[in-house]
Amino acid sequence: MKPNVPDQRKFQTGRRMKTIFTGILLLALIPFASYSQDPHLPPGNLGLTNLQDGNPPSPGWYYLQYVQIDQPDKEKNSHGKTIDGALQVSSLITLQQVVFISKKRFLGGNLGFTTIMPLVKLSTNASGGSAPSINPSPLGDLVTGPLVQWFNRKLFGMDYSHRLEVDVTVPTGGYHSTYDLNPGSRVWRVFPHYTFTLSPVKNLSFSMRHHLNYYFKGIGTDDRPGITYNFNYSAEYAVTKSIFVEAAGYYLNQLEQDAHDGDHNYFQHKYGITDTRERVFAYGPGVGFVFPSGLFLEIKAMKEAAVQNRSEGWRGTLALSYKLNKN
Image 1 (cartoon, helix red, strand yellow):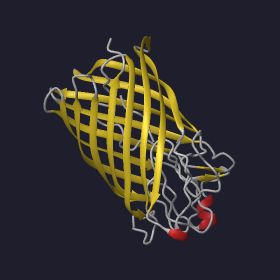
Image 2 (tube, one colour):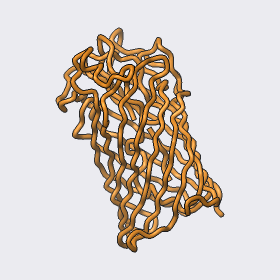
Image 3 (cartoon, one colour):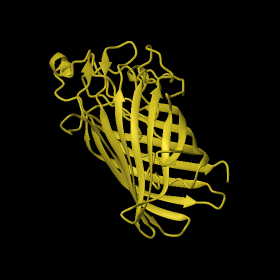
């Protein structure tokens, strides 16, 4: 069982940098700007959950911790071209998640819920008077919601476990308008997601998590980020009963332009920004270990490509999952 997490939004040259949304994921790269711009894209789960994501062992209480570093090396515009001189902002985040899957049945599955609290650390490559101010609060935005987990099902004769979840991001993270970079988003988000693990043959499985993210207007503003779709993926091979190797990654695509007061063409007309939509694809290797105590450990590194309107770099992730009750 993996968390939901969280994404980020990077700014192009000529756009105003005021806050970074790291509520559940982390931010990577933010160029300075000189005037107002489209709203920042709040965080989402980019590559935090991959290996055996739809296949928790059984009902019960789970504690999960994720540590992810996001290290950008360039910023891309809407045409996928590198923006010279963009400020680099590296991010380190740890997510604390509690999941409960009950024995109560609903739609043939098991009801449950999850709660996630992120802690964030941001740093930049700028110094002196050119460095942006960073809010010292480490608190990101709380995420919580209900879920239904279906264990040990079959799909065309293949082993299939899957889960449906509807989560809400609550803007509880640290934020103050005097800082350029903040760990809180000030944006409510509702995001249903569907996760599965499919095993067509022995030792081989495929996992995916699909998110659809709807954002409300930022608190105190008329700006609303455009709806996004993203997924995590993993092709997994069990070397032994306790060791897995995987090819993993993620994909994000913003489906609509950002809006101001309901106008999705505002930033094009007002500031000449032809396209505010973001896109990124990432891939990389990973390895997982299941220990006799029940602890699950996953380590992976993913390189980003096919980027538009955001930073490009790599993400390293360590994930730990532990079932608290053994029955």
